[in-house]
Structure formats: C-alpha cells, structure tokens
Length: 70
Image (tube, rainbow, N blue to C red; front, side, top):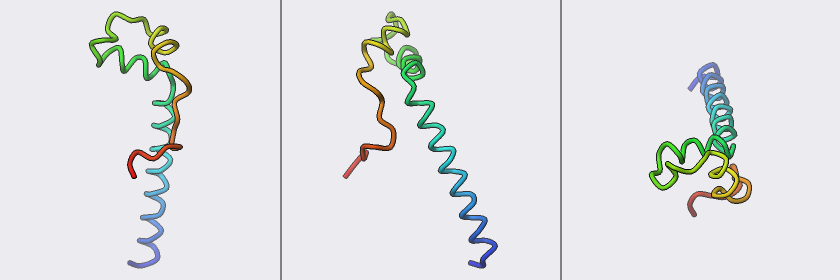
C-alpha cells in the first residue's frame, strides 16, 4: 500500500472508532435502554419507562470496560 492509501485507511478507521464510541454512549443512557426494552421485550410492555430505567436497570451501564468474551 502506498502512503496516501494508508493514510485514507487510518482516517476511515478513526472515523469508525468515533462513531462506535458515540453509539456506545447513546446506548449507555438508561432511558434509551428503557425505551428499547419496552418496545422489544414483552415482559416490559406494561412497565413505565421510568420504572424500567430506575428499577429494572440496576447500577450504571458499563461502556468498553468489560470484555465481551475471553
């Protein structure tokens, strides 16, 4: 690969990492998670968004701190 192509690849990867971090940040918000759970998991259909966010989602969501697999 020539230098220009290498630089383009690095820039694209950096942009992808920024996007990934932004998406993780949005998905770590309890109200966003509560909305997703309410709309996708039948057990949460009748629960309020506040109850899901404040009672059923315990603690603070961890982002990029725990490995998914070994």
